Image (cartoon, rainbow, N blue to C red; front, side):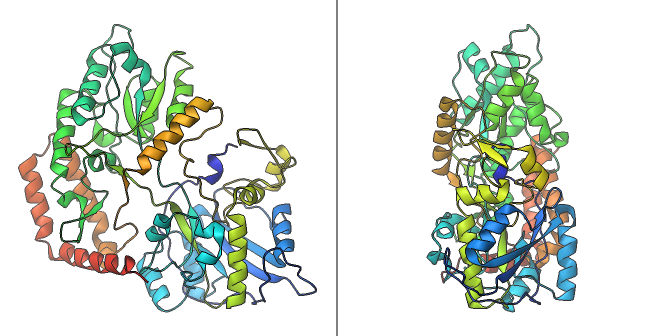
Length: 508
């Protein structure tokens, strides 16, 4: 099991959030590491998800934490596919545990529950817990509810999930450099398509491959400064990205690329996985994906071409001269504390989450006892032992109840990388972090959108894709945008969205 994967989780879904109900008996808090004396352990019930078989609550890692804090942690693991159903049942029964993993904190259900005081506001507490306070401020902003911290983020990296992968050996063969402008980006695509970069004498390569389904990749548009689903206009109002005038630059560019045949055709049908397929089969020279995929794809490609090198780069600059990349949310859900838990017990819960938000303790929870359940080499790569696997340790099982520790380079590192590759990737992530932009409306769900967004999103995606492939033109798109500006229900949604945005960004 590698170091990167232990902090990664598959899937993403919006889950209902629970109303307040019953919790386990409260207990007096003990400071971290203090002697518990003869006090009975405090029971802490936690509801979370799992992506594999659920481990028991008798793991040595839990026993160590229980002893340290004089607690008895009871974790209920629910398979990811059934997690929302389980939450629905608990919502109906009013039975809320002490701590619940909540995937989406900005649903209408959560808003109602939070407004009714169902969960602890952790805003005044986080600063007293150094590991939790060390999480990037942007992550707390992203998961904020009305400007408040209503839970502990399950942290993930903010940058590194986007890069432009390029066949470096093709660049070198054709005497080209990595593109830094959109004009250069097009020129490299053209050269990779027409100038026989693989040297086989056949016209069988393309310059670029990109995802088209189920929705067009945000990268196609956001790299032109068109907004990451949303943007804030000159009046301080949140608007959808397809209202942004810069989107026409993006569509015109990709229409030119498609018409010239320098990217893989059939864009509306291409799946995410096909980026890897086309690049590792030597058919395509560029694609969008994670920074670490340069190493991963190269390993695949070297099986058929030992001289191949795929390298990640920054996106080319937009026509305005700026580089635009998307900042990820930095979390996959939050752990929320039932308000029926008293304050001493709340502080004990925060003690535990602060303790587990370090690399050493995270490894204890995720992989067990070092040297018994897992081994770690000098580079920090984790290998699970058969004994550890048998007990149920794994990042996608035993670590699902903790918030993890923040590592900005998760999307840059893989086992087996040379020190040079790792240093290059870290430097690239550092550079990306200076230009990445968060989605200002991240997580905000309006009542009107709950009813109509599926239909709206399909129409928007279809129109943009159709302009790119030439099925519709710029005038069609203008009329399409105007139809949304004239739609009372969509304008109601935007009004609700801006009210939520104002609440979310309010300073407390």
